[in-house]
Length: 388
Length: 248
Image (cartoon, rainbow over all chains, first blue to last red; front, side, top):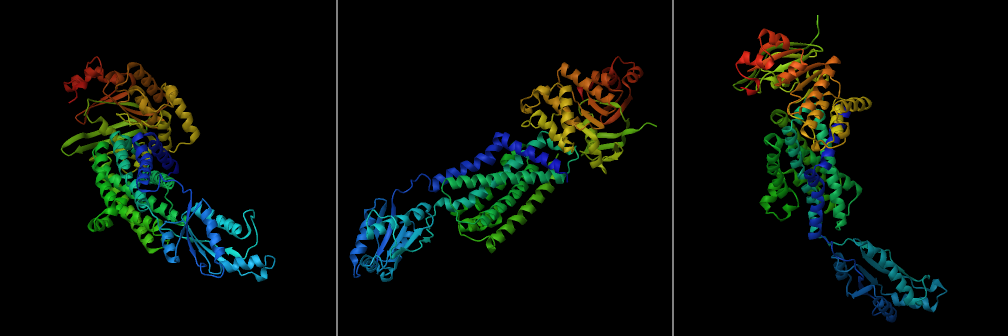
């Protein structure tokens, strides 16, 4: 294989991608518009950042020896405009509301809070006489703003309660426990759709490959390349590389757009890497479908229409569209490669599966085997019947 | 003994029940500018396609530069440059990008590619338009870039399939001068045309094909003398009873 030839072919294809308006739309603008449209329609975009933090409060010191301290602390919390305090009688209910995103934090005032305050005020200079205790704070891990802003506000109010407004830092018998970050399940519809959108955009590579091959055949360009020393292996390698680059651009664009509209999958770099690999392998499958389409199609116009023979089943049965399908249609989805791409990405992004989990590895295996098989069939068919 | 660039022996190509090339035998010397004449559908382009390795013959053999076109097509393709009858160019690439793309397919060194490209653009008066996209070129400019793409790698053997068709007279004469220059460099050129004056002007020897068969072979002057004709068009009429542009 000659590297110079492969790079020339890849360079030519990339220039085509950027310079031909129809291809530019399909590869770059379409995924951007699609993600933005679905993100706006089904995601959290358009909302405003909260100007107040809703905090659930459980006071376990209401019947203690010195309840006036906890009441004073709660009064100071309530007086703070940035906080909206909601009182709960039991921790379980408060935790439930936190996990559903109804409130952004839960603060648990311990039963010896008043006793601790009293011990400090009677012997401020003798820590040995203090009754030490801890305020428990639980925070919404999905809200970076809340998890960063709430602990210092509570700390400030605690100091003000015990020592007065002017004090900013002082040793106290009461500590705020390391905030426990709570996973909040406030997923939008878009969170469920996003994995399928990655597969959805890739499916349309079938159309661009089919159009491109059929047009180059119509214009005598494939024949012309065939009069040069370029081998079939070099040509197909260049096609694989340029379409994988296209898929990579699509994945990055979709992810950036999804991030902009509020998509925040809580996954590791390794999960992202494996997601990229799955989508790149899937692009080879679509090159194969594109070649099969170009073999059958008589013209580039016909190739556009015929490409939907492969696009439609993959789109309806194997992407986010499948969420609302009947059980029969969902079972049929297992026969299209895009289903396994969506399933793997859903497992990684939504279910929090690790890269080594069996479901992800099986999906990757199915996508790889199918993609190589479809690509080989496409190459053989195009070589035998499609080049004329 | 003269070295042969191209040898055809009983070359035949059938498409279902149509015989496009019918037992063609021919030898073309190295450095020769050979014209393949005949009306549309006579079998000229099919013959060229077989010689370029694009079609497999039904019968017979063909060697180009000493390589069998079927068995050694990879080596043979390194020797040849092909200018197709229909302009085959990438409209979204500039003229220079099209030419460099093909130069890279022949794995040319960068410096040599640049040097050859500049020389050819200059000779065919396209230097000013080298960085414009080919989609914006006129028909004549596209045909000239089509020719440059075939010759960028300085091939030993060039197949020029109707290189001046649909060109204005000025462009056609520029291309004729260019082809004469190639001949002076010792290149073997196989030119197909149905312009008789083009063959008379350029070719040392011509072969006339009709219905896939070689019906006459020789220099234009010899043919005109043998057939007591005033030009090659007249020769064709005397051989077939038809004018060459009437076709079949």
